[in-house]
Image (cartoon, rainbow, N blue to C red; front, top):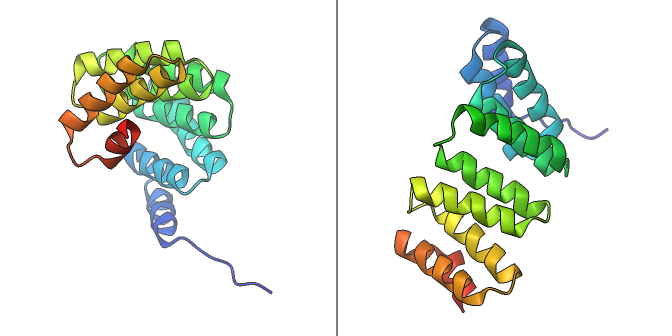
Amino acid sequence: MQPVFTDPIEEQFRQHLQAFPGDVEGRLKLGAHLLNAGRSDDALAQFKVILKRQPKHQPALNGKALAHARKGEFSQALTAMRKALAGAPSEPRLWVNYGNILKDDGYPEEAISAYRKALSFDGKLVGASLGLGNCAATLGRIEEAIAAYDQALDANPLYARAFYALT
């Protein structure tokens, strides 16, 4: 019989939520932890509990979108992300995540628009610049890609992925 691995961080969150089942932030953190651990279905369950109580909760909608995207369920991911953006249209990180989902779903041109929107709110978002550069490169727009990678390097000169993309 193989030993059962238990995640001590997950156990702490679950114990906390047993004592405080209405703690939205605790449940959100558990969902994010599960998502980062590659457990999209379990994360999705946590985000859905929050959304049942607060249907417009942007961080839970974002988490739900990311969980669906990791499962390859892009239609559900895009629906959830659009709801999140409707409630927080000036949140640049939501636009980056929206761009990432569009890119992964095979829509590089639309993803570029989302990354540009993110950069219009925060020009130093390296993830937006890299996503824009990668999509531009995919579309054969090399000068645009180089400009985006340069922007990522300007925002954070130590960001190696941008540097390697240029070489």
